[in-house]
Amino acid sequence: MLEVKFPVGVVSGVPVVTVPEEVDVTNAHRLRVALAKAAAGRPPALVVDMTRTRFCDSAGLRVLVTAHKQAQAAGGAVLLALPSTAILRVLAITGIDQVVSSFSSLDEAMAQAIEYADGQGRFLGLIRASARSCRCSAWTGSGGGRRTPGRTGTWRRSAA
Image 1: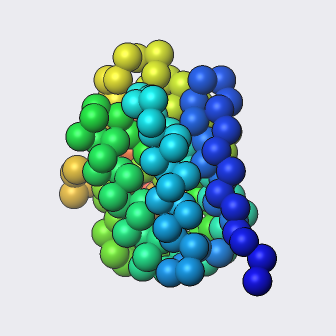
Image 2: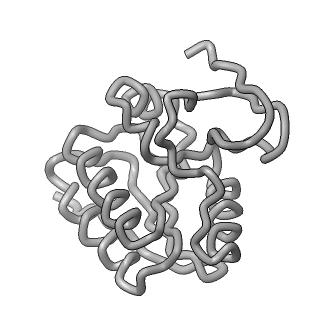
């Protein structure tokens, strides 16, 4: 059986963990190790590149939530680059989308991580704790295409 890798790199000073097509109970521990490695230097934000990921079971979700909680406790954040509607639906059903911020592309997640680092840890409403947050397809107002509450404007719900 081929060993699944979770490469950790640094792009523009932001740690990036690249996730393979599938995360499940057989490889979730490798994701945990990769996230711990990425967070070792206590960066203000780290990005989890899930742009290739098509499946993530409860073991993978638990690792992501644990990493988010640890980062938040240290004053940082975990940002997901996650275009897969199937996984986004699972995040919505479980309520994880209300806690962990996700972006539809790696570029969007990286831009937010860099902005967060430049802001010296002030996350300007990105960590979702509000019941107003939702999986949205469009944002009208300031903040560009981010799917986060705390800015002036309105949300349009996706037809999910």
